[in-house]
Length: 206
Image 1 (cartoon, rainbow, N blue to C red):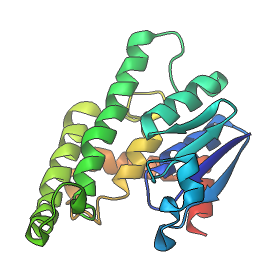
Image 2 (image 1 turned 180 degrees about the vertical axis):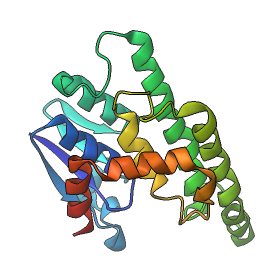
Image 3 (image 1 turned 180 degrees about the horizontal axis):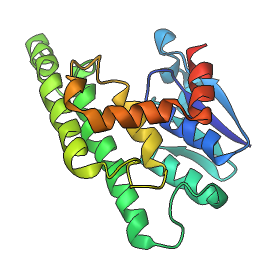
């Protein structure tokens, strides 16, 4: 059985939703950031990066959301969360998810984790002031050029959708004016109506 280590409010939500959508047999374990559990010796044995999510499989541990989402899609092909017979279409999915991981999430992280890039308090404050602009610009690009609609890749739901949904939930906290993102917000509402999403959100918010 698969086991997902997660923390509410993090990008682990995307993999959690994907597992549920795939009909996978899995269990979950919450990692408590308030007690610094992610840096405990027990958890570092699972993920030396000290971050979530982590997905324990029968072949070993996977980390990094794009990799985990791809694994879930390929392990449960009947769920049709990604094209199994079209290399270019699958690469497009990977391209979108990589952008969320390498650019959008990193922009967001400058708000609370500026210590990863600087050591001066004044630098942290400057980074925080930039969040609405940098995250907003990333989502403006998604809105106008990348979201094909009604789902990310068009008419078919894929592993891109829970990932975009997860980062969309952070927009209010990042100070982004969501009224400028009608298509993204419509996608968010559509996601909230899915049974798998409702179930996972209920578990993570419990």
